Amino acid sequence: MNLLVLTKRVPATQEEELRIVGDGQAVDLTKVPFKVNDWDNYSVEEAVRTVEKTGGAVTAISVGDAESDEVLRRAIAMGAKDGFLIETEQVIHDPQARATLICNFLKKEALPFDAIFTGVQSEDDQFASVGGILAAKLGLPYASMVIGIDAFEADHVVARRELEGGMQERIKVTLPAVLSLQSGINEPRYVSIMGVRKASKVERKVFKAAGYQEHVKNMIEVVKWVYPAKKGGATMLGGELDTVCKDLLGILKEKGVYQ
Amino acid sequence: MSYALVVAEVRRGLFEERNLDSLGLSHLLGKEITLLMPDEAYIVSENVSHTIIRVKTEETSFLNPLTMTQIVRKVIEAKGAPDVILFTSSSSGIEQASYLAGSLDLPLITDVSGFDAERGVFLKSYYSDKIFGEFKPKEGTFVLTVRSGSFKESATVQESAAVVEALDNIAPPEGRSFVEYVEEEKGEIDITKADFLLSVGRGIGSKDEIPGYEELAGLLRAVLSGSRPVIDKMWLPKPRQVGTSGKTVRPKVYFAMAISGAFQHIAGMKDSDCIIAVNKDPEAPIFQHAHFGIICDANKLRDKMKDTIKKG
Image (cartoon, rainbow over all chains, first blue to last red):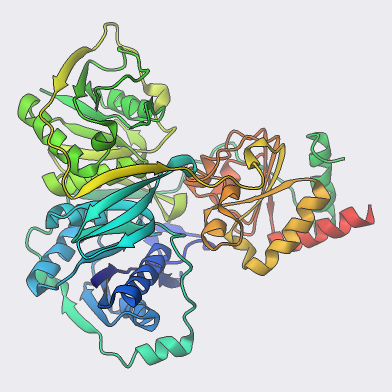
């Protein structure tokens, strides 16, 4: 099996305070650390595990600036054979533009593949749609929210999709296909700094995005960035930790769940 | 004709309630509504849309993104292109919407949770609800997926029953087929039955912290649950997951420790009688939904609470 896996470098905003600047024209990410998109980490792991069983190779592909090389090195450290960067300084918000760029790249470079893995979504823009658009543009079958691959055969996969409320559906998808994988599908291996350093000795190829711009256009535009509307908000308990604890236990007693 | 095409989310004979959000947004957009659904028995009022197109196909085939693209092409052939095509922001809704947008080359905005009619902009979450983008699609037909709970109040009942039309000759899907539904394994405990949930998120840092929370839950006589990242990392078993892909809970007290509050998590616990949130990030979205909030390191508060309770 030859598997392509898309991996993206994203800002780690979980514990960061984000500021909107320039009258809503941008979000300041200059002080935010970057990391591999969580969903892609699971996808790379799944791709590597698959070829460990079936033979073949994994190629990691990233769209982004030169810094995105970091997520390619990481994928190689996890077991990918190659890392390709489609380099662009532009921040692409529109999933149509992103998917078209990737589609052009795959066609022009004529990369052979049995399946393309993507994460269900990226942590930053959460569009959850690049995989689906790409599949449609390549004329391939598609499945998203894949939480388990039960069988990986020469011409098809049997996979489970996560639905709502703890339910899943089992489906059969003909290869080649695009699959978007859900977090929790596996337990990604640990990647050491040494491992990434060793991976950096493997050459990664850089392709300028400018060479793959046919039909790439923004179909949606960001007018402005805004903060979420404040609701009533919580009553905040402050002070020393001792006081907070006592107040908290008082509330639990009042609500009748703690004696 | 100017109209909104609402693709219903149906599952195992049920017309999902979150379809009301797609209907509500269509109404806010001022469009005549055409509702697209399989030709099976669903409990849905005939007055929620102007037109209903009943598609002669199995429900599982209707939900298949490959088939849906074929169905929408046929609708466009018969009725002309709609102004907007709406799906629910759900496992199948987003899957179908993205495949359709890719096939027909249409602008797509997913997870829409707000609409400013005056400026014609749609609000979409970025960075787990910390920031929202105001998006505008280019001229012509566009595709949206609509966040559950965002527009249902705007859904209206029409005076007259919908005109029902039929659509058939849908070819069985190639390339992808449904096999069966798989139910999640039953856990040792049912978190939906608990009065008091102590729920932990990825902010606790590592699996090694879990025993400390188990101890606190024991002291408080609370049941331990968790958010998606905690389940994904296998710090807690899947039946203990709160959120749209896990369980929806309504305890008397929901005590969220180190959970930032992704929308999918909030949707699974927002109807709790009392929500208490602990997080070191004062901007964590969960504080917008909590009744009480504490800004501090959850692990420190946990240890302090254990000490306080033990001392009596």
